[in-house]
Image (cartoon, rainbow, N blue to C red):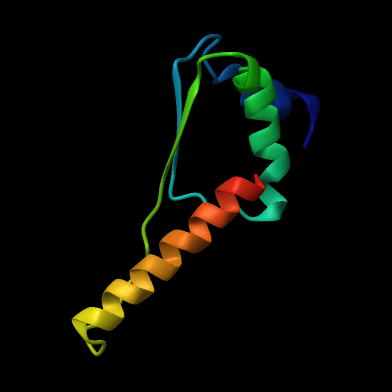
Length: 87
């Protein structure tokens, strides 16, 4: 990406924030540099900035029992939490 594209990307963020909300992000290792740049930008480890993650657990088909759907949903939640802690 050229310098112009990077300057546009960096200028779309506010200077000061109280909360950073990520919605439906994969949180894969390939995304870490993006998160790191946001966390550095807002110095989240030395400030009161709150970080929120929201995700969609996916389509759990009706062919599963209620018990299985809850178990699958819980597995997805654990997977997402592991990715957040790795981040």
